[in-house]
Length: 46
Image (cartoon, rainbow, N blue to C red):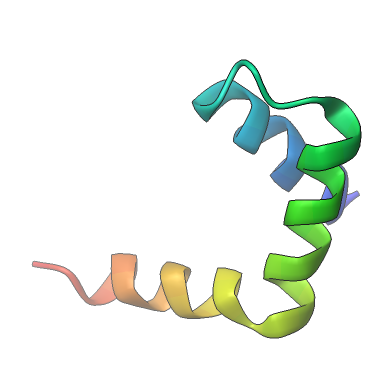
């Protein structure tokens, strides 16, 4: 479910992105920890 939500968010931000590419990018971001780091950065931004 998290991967699908992330893929949908990517498609909203980048409308030309295919569903398959959005899924692949969301999996990579979640698996590599990049999504977590981006979230932590967002939380720490004042």
